[in-house]
Structure formats: C-alpha cells, structure tokens
Image (cartoon, rainbow, N blue to C red; front, top):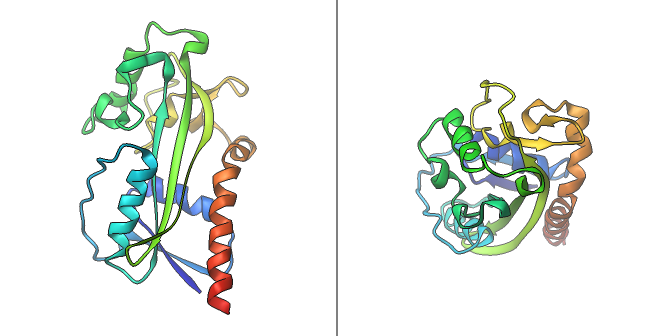
Length: 209
C-alpha cells in the first residue's frame, strides 16, 4: 500500500489532486490538514513546476509518506505585462475576497474582446519521498475564455477563477457546468493524469518486488 499525502491545506486544490489520482488501487490518501505538519514554504521559483517541486521536497522531509504537491497558473496573453502566470493571486489581491478578485480581473480585461480573452490553465504536479524528487510534470489542462460579466455574485469559496472561466460551447462558466459537462472537459487534463498514474504504477511495481 502506497501512502500519499496531499501537500496542501487548500480544500479545492486537494480535491483537484485527488481527482488526478482517480481510482488507482493500492494507495491510501492522507490530507495535510489532518496532520500536525505546519510549515510555510515560499513559492519563489521561476516556474510553476519548480514551485511544486520545492513544496514536495520540503514537505516530504517531514513525513514518511509520499508527498504530492501542485502549483497552477492562468495565462492570459491578451493582458501582456499586466499579468503574470506565477502571480495571479498577487495581481488581483492575495487577501481580497473571491468576489473582489473576480471583479479586479474583469476590470483589467475591460477593453479586451473576443479572442483577446483567451486563457489557458497551466498545472504542475510533483511527487517526492523523504526529500527526494521522484516525478514532476507541467501541462496545459484547460483552455477557455474569461467572461466579460459575472453570471452572478454567488462564488463558491476559493473558486473565483472558475466563476470567470467561460466555455462558449456551453455558454457557461466553470462553476455552472453540470457533472456531464465537466466530464466532457476532463479529456483536456488526460496527459498529466496519465503521467502521474504511470509513475505511481512504477513505484507500486518496485514495492512488490
């Protein structure tokens, strides 16, 4: 049995990583929020992947479990130097409310139309054990547009970006999609999911020998 610690206390991010693990057998998932580990790791690297690696390596020094971490960033080319894939939260106000963050982004993009509102979600994940990096990957997992106006002000906690993340084919933002529509979109993230599953299966195979 492989014990995997999800290396974030953010409930939304933790759910995201568990979804990538899917239905892999012979693993048991633990959550950082349920441990006594209390460490602040500065995300000061030059790429999302390096940030995820730093978190995984540092956290894995504090536990005997395998540690899975992630870092993600939205790229909005239409904003040019007004936007930074590594500093999404800082630009919209790291300590602002979800609603304030959504409005800040829409204000930044008020003069952009059509294809200028294209956005991509870059996602990095890392697996480490006892301070050693075992696997790391970064891929684009979603492509969409930033909506021009909020559908409403009822934003689920921590999901402000999902409230502006718009899919023309459904005429809905991510937070408004039903389960069937979300399942149709998961194909976009199949690359990094398969990469992670392959590594875990390799580890399981080695542990059986």
